[in-house]
Length: 190
Length: 220
Image: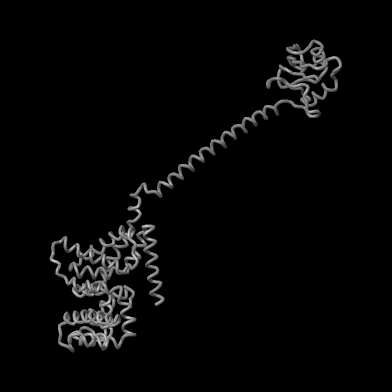
């Protein structure tokens, strides 16, 4: 935890320093740790390696100006949105149809900032409430959620146990998790 | 929850190769559920696989781009910081010019002073009461063999001031082969003072250095 805190703090410091100086060394220090993630993200949307490599460099190029203007509090989530938007714009420019499961991702975006409260408060203090809510889920979601969160099975194992396709397993877990959260928030209010 | 991002890429590779235990796979899958960034990256690498060579090349490209920075900056020739530095430099230059000029003019004055002093020292100023009685008027003039100081002492001793009073006498004469003053003429002074000075010269020491002399006597 201590490590995480200092790591984040230095990231915030780097952002402030870069904003005032424009020193590319600072921006490089900020950007480099995220390059593997950004490259993977670009591979997902752009599909081609050479295009993805150029995209990683172009995103850095755009950050040079953007980060001198914008106030960024959470660099990781900001960078994620920025990189993803860049890739989607590239796709639109190249004229390919964007049928990538955007819906699947938009709900997760909201959770990026909220997941910690869910993790720490909900799971530990409201276990009984969760038990009740679990019963409200449909069978597939309930089965997958239990296997994934309580029995700590991976997607592959869940596929084997349930016989569902891996993409089905994923969406059951994603949607089940969302429904669970909504249900528990309702209970918390009432 | 958040891992170091270099740790992430190795973890992703292990996950995609099936090198992790089911528990570890579950852990990463959970993490990806919470972190869309990680989720998208895993989806991307799932198709193409993790290539460390490509990632290393990307890091190299980034470093090259950062190294271009100075050139980029030098293109912005007239930003406010540069203008500020230029203004200060100009001011310093002007100040140093003024200072240099002031020192120079002061030195010139000092030099003039030194020249005057040197001229004065070339004059035979006797010691004693600090006032000379006799001195040569031109540099080419002959000097007494005994020296100007002794000559002045001689004149001081032998002048009958009661006869002369206050007067300035200028005498020109030729120096004979034996060093005696001959053909003495006067260009300044009362006749009595001139006569007294002539006697002092004729009775005085021999002369050397030149065959002509022009001497000024100041009697007080």
